[in-house]
Length: 93
Image 1 (cartoon, rainbow, N blue to C red):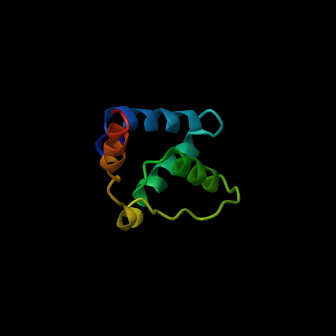
Image 2 (cartoon, rainbow, N blue to C red):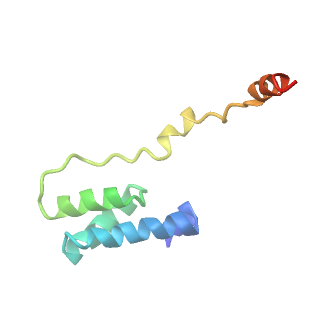
């Protein structure tokens, strides 16, 4: 449910399916623990669920650091290509 709220219907549903696919390789209790751990760090990413599920099983993994919101300060607006369009239109003469 959180994935669809955060990512929208299509992307959220895809993320939930990816989490379900993690269950192919890991037992239910590990996937459940992975989901809970991912939600604690504010993530809905299936890769985070898989890493946390493996950690729950005692497999050696590096710690997960939530960076989703931390990188927003680097967001920039898409560049405008109007200048290039005007150059191309000038060559049509």
